[in-house]
Length: 77
Image 1 (cartoon, rainbow, N blue to C red):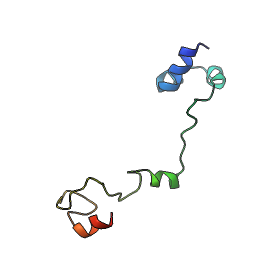
Image 2: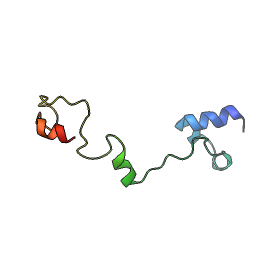
Image 3: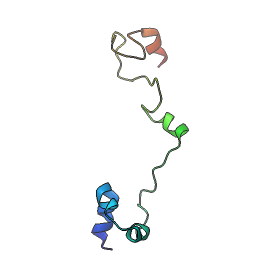
Image 4: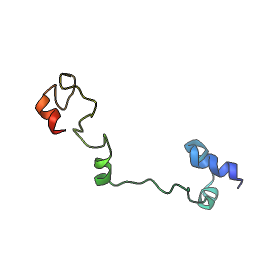
């Protein structure tokens, strides 16, 4: 397999899915490594947990579902 085809398969899901099972098996590992996180790790990702408060929230912002403009809640975020 040519280098450009390998890189295309790494970058483009459609290109990867167009490969045969044999071609996929022959693919080298992506140099950045696998990006697989379990549920506990995902909750630590910014925005990954339920009720994650936005750092850009305005304490007067009644639209915020987390604090509803409550400055006490914002102060704890």
